[in-house]
Image (cartoon, rainbow, N blue to C red; front, side, top):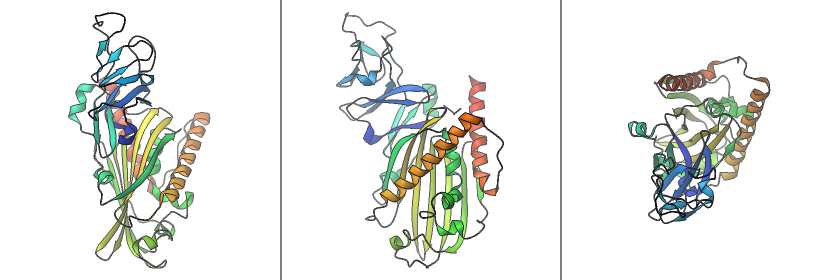
Amino acid sequence: MYPTHCWYVAATSAEVTGTPLGRRSLDRGLVLYRTPAGRAVALEDRDAHAPYPLSLGQLEGDLIVSSYSGFAYAPDGRCVRVPTQASVPYDARVRAYPLVEQDGLVWVWFADAGLAGLRQPPRAPWLADPAWTTFGDEWTTHAGALLLHENFADITHVAVVDPIIAPPALSAGPVPRLDVEVSETSVGFSRDYPPAPLAKWHAPLVGAADDEAFAQREEGRFVTPGLWVDSWHVYAGEDTFTFRFTHGVTPIDATTTRHVWRVSRNFAPSADLTSLFHEYYRRVREILETMQRVLDQDGPRPLVRVATDAAAIQVRKIVGRMIADEKEGS
């Protein structure tokens, strides 16, 4: 139901601390913690001695200790201490997952560890760049990951779902043609809009009147199954005012997804837009969960497609091909 040969956001940097964090990702238990030196670690969340989560244990320096068996595990997953005997069984270990922490995100590789070095996790440097103002949230959405990606691939729904937050350019008439670029593993698209006013909440942020018109551009990219990035540009003379929307998408299982979303902008740093976008994404989550319930109850059916679905169709093809390739290689 989802590819495994790619990096996924297991947590944000802020979530990984000196207290073990239990998390489900890709149908498996994961425990994340930070060593005294600040290194983030990801291990299988299951004691080798008993079916008991290591996330319920405690940390002793670099070690995580099961609160049931007392087995102590190093960051590489090896058991290094057993309280009832001097020797440690040779096969006493748990799986350690390759991990990369960057841009405020903790990326984990869930497939064969030997393949992790062949691909690097994608970057999102604006999330840690002081030139950008960023806010957001992370939560569980009870819908499959592909439903999230397909929603991001067509923002024309925004004009219907939330007319207040939507750019007026989306509802000014038939939307311009979408230019789509497809590679083996990613989909990018863009669309240029003729000059149009900004939303009433947006115009003051760029010092514009409600009826002042600006050329605008929409860009989106399915970077990997674990990351989607959108941008909305407003061109005002020599200035370009950009909103960038970052989505970390991690399947928990076939019908549940961990969603880390961030809204970044390179202008109006003091404006407070948290509640506006939080309410919008809460509404999107509600809609996606409704879609999943319909699929669960009635099953999939052929969909009527329109021109704005061009990117979503390509995303579905890429994900399907990645899954098929993994099955052939297993």
